[in-house]
Image (cartoon, rainbow, N blue to C red):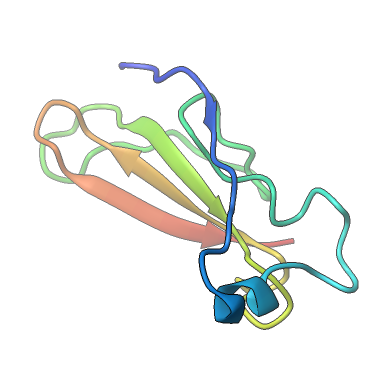
Length: 98
């Protein structure tokens, strides 16, 4: 299984509308800043090995995308996790929250 080096993603609003959506009034300061490509997933719940449904190969963790703010929140400040199979280029994603 290929491992991608960790590359943090920095959220930056490009419009005033987007700026109003970013941030939490009630969540820990780290929430909204956990998006990244590669490395190891920071799973909110227990994880399991991701196996490609197309070819059976172990999938590579590709990225995690954090909740944005109080109004654009994935369940209870959750994240989307994306895995990719580098053998057949199939992807799979799921959401976990606290």
